[in-house]
Image (cartoon, rainbow, N blue to C red; front, side, top):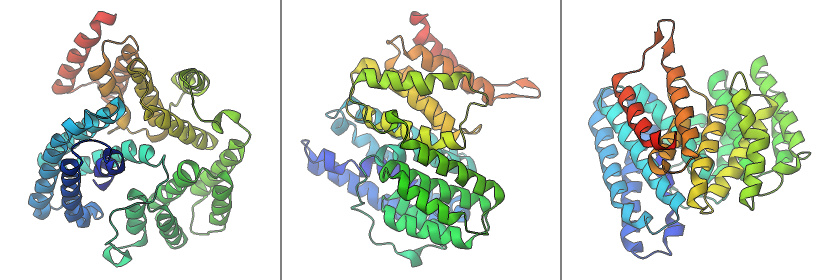
Length: 374
């Protein structure tokens, strides 16, 4: 929840240059207040899924969605990529609200968690420190992990690292430990852009007896990836032109289609975190509209490779945006084909393919949009 709302909150400095700044600041402040009231539930799964709290959470979601709707006219004055961001976040929040109010709180939580990737791997690019949410301290959270997550979400990265490290040194929960380790990898790769600092920190983690053999193997591979980073020239340069982006995609992203399994792990994790970061950075430089469909397609591939989930993936959100908003461009057919493939795979089991009726209707609508390109 917090992570998704941050997409809007973190655009405040950019909006200061636009007319209507008082109105948009008011809306963002209001969203911030609604979000602040939901924090006790966001960081506590039991509270979030407890029906006793449904009225409060539903009200908070509704208020945030209404305020996001009101920001549309302000985003229309901004570069196309920010307009898309507003639309994607709004649609995602609406879908999440439907899921939550429909009684499937756990799946709604999955959606919120997946949505976090859309915000965080974009807003980690500037490495700015947070300017909001200074009121909550460690005693407001049940454990170091939740407090580290809060700081990660609100871009207080040094504090996040401190409490991730404390949590890692004490816990035996290998699932949350793995998440904490991956958060550290993101910070060192995207925010700090310092493979040396990452190697130093992970080498210390290898001394931790609480970390399982499997997680230590992940760490060993990430250390290799961080060391390789300095040897791979393409990962040290920024993407200054469209030809740079195309070359990067040809070398790293298109080959993913022939990969089995599709997702990346080990040494490749570092490579694709950096690649996704570089594409995000280029994406928010206001590229030409005809390039946006391909960028969305590549973001989808990198997201799928790094965060594959059979239940919910932001990869599909990128693809749907590509199809709905850019269906007049030939490149959008790639988005459609990839989306159909993802959906078919998700609903294929031992009994065959069983795609829900509403999803089938959506696919038919998308096919109509893409049909003139075939």
